[in-house]
Amino acid sequence: MKALINGIQVTLNKKQQEDVEKGWANQPLPVESDVKREAARRILEIAPEWKQRNLLAQAVKLTAKGRSNWTEDELAAWEAGEVIWSTVTAIREASDKIKRMSPIPTDFQEDKRWP
Image (tube, rainbow, N blue to C red; front, side, top):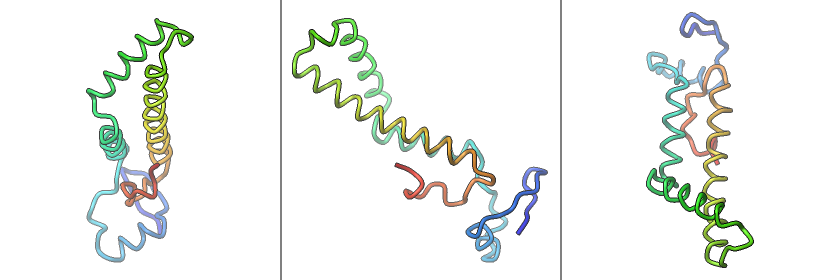
């Protein structure tokens, strides 16, 4: 099924076609800013802004100290920070992938599309 979105003709996927058939066609299709908001929500859920600032400050401090001078606690803190940042990176990559889809799936907020 074809649809005209913002003046551009696109082919709807099966889920979007089902939505149209169910009468949900009057709902606007998601746009890039919707995906960015969802990514931000997911990132802030695991790393609120205060935690991100603390991790950054800790990384600066530890980098200046030099890895060979870290205590066991500092190494553990660094590794915990790396786990958080790798999850944030995975969320950003998922967001980028979803934003490249045309059209953006109406179910983009579902957990199956995110790490």
